[in-house]
Length: 550
Image (cartoon, rainbow, N blue to C red; front, side):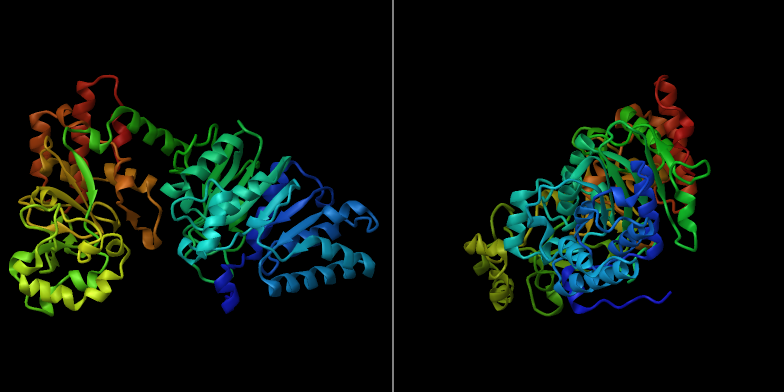
């Protein structure tokens, strides 16, 4: 199937068009969830109609029911928004043609299309109408591409528009608020909010006031007419709080594949949840048994930072100008004492460090990292930084503190540099964990670190490399193209492991003996054995088989 190329206007408005078979699936699920019999008895909202991917099939469904054209209730059948005049004109013309072909008189066609379409910003339009069906594909616009004045307006109106979320988040909040008591909402859009920190408020809004009837993860498919990295999912939501939830994951959109995910039928690949996720909990899996297993792990074992005294998770340094601070010695003569060995994600391989001789220019005092270094004492470094002064002073962090114009975005802390620490690249397939045992390196911003006063770090490193931990990361991480996952601090803090003092000496020795082992199956067997020992000492703990991720 040939993909259409998006116009410049569609790129700026965030329009991404949905494939017809996906639209058909969503329409069918809306009707089933709402127990609706006829489209002509409903009121429908499309918050961002684009090229009419949803509006046109909905109007075709209406005319297929042979409505009475003089029925004035048709005036309120549809309300479709878009900020693009060209898109609205195109869809109005397409709808008008459908109505005329169905025998609708010309004056009524003109009246209905005039009432059904608005070329306005849906998020700023003050309609109080309620709708039986809200369906569509909201625009894909990242926070940084939203004009600052619009950001402020949206933040003033929508509690879920927080941090640096994409524009689809307030589209969710606004659209769901316009549902009638019997209404059903269905979007296809990014799944990022279901696990991310910026999605917490939206998840809570859904949990507190709505019911997730269907969540269909499609992040490994391409349900759109153009190739986009959208990590999509289909959501069907209503106000019937307390009902069951169906969920599933589509990995292919070959012909008729979506029919295998129909809810309410005997043979389906959907999983039934008696209770969906509560509050702002991340929606970590579409399989109920997996959720129960991970919840059981979390209830029995502490999180990493609570597993031993003095155990901390952090992230490496972001300079705010890597082209100046990273590897400056390759282009300038700089005092060696001003350079820190820098370890980046690509230096960490198979559980070891293959350092690429990369350094970071450290602008902080070498004896007190709360102060900037005196440039007059380091004339070579000072001359280098002054050559780049205009670029460095233009940064936000420098404008706020002019006297420290040459600081890095994050403060470089000597305690982090000198500490023995576990290093974890942010984006990886899983299990790529290394140990800087002598405190020789400072981690870059794409590397997270773990320190501990109580853990034997070699033993902890082996546990963190196991599938027992990788699968926990996978359940809370957004899924990247190619199956990579994110080892961000927020995800690491949701990983649960045995407490350090629940391990016996033999357990620690066994784990340490696998330090440096590249065969993950051996590591998994070792960790499973240790977990079995912990379970034996704590009789009412988890069933050991639940930890067999090999």
